[in-house]
Length: 49
Image 1 (tube, rainbow, N blue to C red):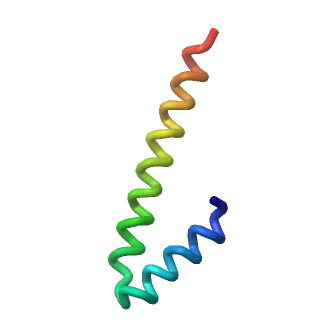
Image 2 (cartoon, helix red, strand yellow):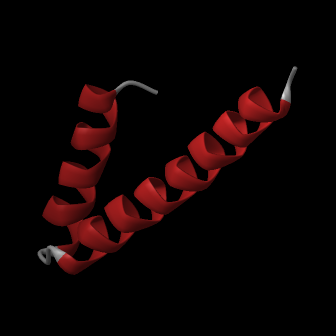
């Protein structure tokens, strides 16, 4: 999924709920998962001779 599609989904959650809390929590969760994935990937690349 590309960034514009994620933005539309988060905007949809905002419009449906009427609150920014749900989109903000989802955004934080997405960032956390991507951070873990990126960290894992770079550790594997660094460990490869």
